[in-house]
Amino acid sequence: MNGVGRFVFCLVIAVVTVSGAATVYGDEARNQRLRERLASNVLRWGGDIEGGGPYMFRDPSNPDRIIGFEVEVIRAVVEELRKQLDLPGLHDEFVHYEWSSLPLGLAKRDFDVLINGMEITRENITKLRFTRPYYLYCQQVTVRANEDRIKDFGDCVKFRVGTLAGSAAYRLLEDAGASSMTAYEGQIEPYQDLVIGRCDAVVLDFPIAAFNVGKDPRYKNVGEPIGWGGYGIAARVDDADLVAAIDAAIISLEDSGKLEAIYRKWDLWNDEQKALGDIASPEALLAWADKKNGTADAAGAEWTFKNYAPLLVQSAGVTVGLTVISMIVAMVIGLVVAVGRLYGPPPVQWLALAYVEFFRGIPLLLLLTFLYFGLPSLGIDLTAVQAAVIGFGLNYAAFEAEIYRSSILSVPKGQWEAAHALGMNDVTAFRRIIFPQAIRTALGPMTNDFVAMFKDTSLVSVIAVVELTKQYQILARSSLKFVEIGLLTAALYLAMSVPLGYLARYLENRWSVGHK
Image (tube, rainbow, N blue to C red; front, top):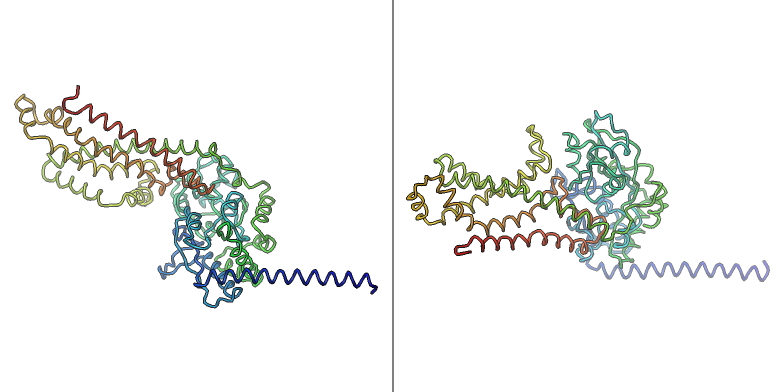
């Protein structure tokens, strides 16, 4: 080797040595920072056990225990971090959070990372710092076993299709122009409605379909997998050290085969998971998904005021319609119950009292769930809107009945005597003298109930009615603009409820004694 050759050889060795030393030093410096941060030996992770399997859910044999494939993934990651950081006492701590609020809980530092089927999308990576993907998902179309009209995703968008609100499947169906789409709060309810015929197909992530459908003979999966993407563990944007350490842990789990073992245990392994080792970052995942899907990630489109404002206004219209119809039902039933309790024979009075105590004593959410999901087992199948109107009407009628009863009793007995002196019978006296005076007293409490019902309509999200609050949750989950969209949602609620207060005060003044 001549002098020039020796110089080049030594230069290459020096560069490699320095680069390796820098890498080792960088990793060690990072690890030292993490050791100081995790001195309490606890890594807190957020998730939503209400989301259900196979992600995370309570063990049926031991409800105090949380199980699921993501529980096993995060605990395997913590085990790798324990070795990587040389922290023998490091352990995980679960923090339950509603799914839609997980990014907010992360920002508030209620936990260190979140893992709960959080999709790596172009929009999400601007608000959260993701690790490399730990699972590659796709969307699966599920239909009833005897369904022959729907062969694939292209067919299902022409029929009634159910999905999870704010999910990748929801956005995929929205982009495909699904003619009739129902967004559910939970992932079990769509399959229940599919069985009883409320929808014709369900589109959800493959892990959900695999866990809930499985070998159930009532269902079958159709069509090729579509809508590929990846789940990642998310941290705060400025938490580069922790994300880098978790990335190293995921690589170790892939190389050792532990990740594959977890997925095989939960029947979630497929050949696509072999690509995980080649997808080293969220950006690489997006490029992989674009190629796999043959299109750019639609979820990455920028959410602007023009995108979400019309949807919120449209949902506000649903809230208004639902509230007005339900309040009319409540007022009619409430008046009947109040009159029956005051002037009916003893059996009617007892029934009226029982009605008030029963419907005033049970949670409205329980009533709505029973009407929509419970009655079909008894052969009574209500639509979501019908169940909502009946539920609100029955519940609020109990409160309206008490308002009417107390208002009627507040009318002086002398008014009855004066009416009788003028030759009126009891019915005429009540209709022309007593009730008009009572309604003036009742107007204030009735208005309060009307405003309360505007806000309580948010409960109908559990039975798949997309009113204002539900639309806010869907849009906020898709865009992560919780504050911006939340402020507009609050403004719409105020625009609907504040005028009622002015109307009530106007009517009170107009109907007051001495008004000219």
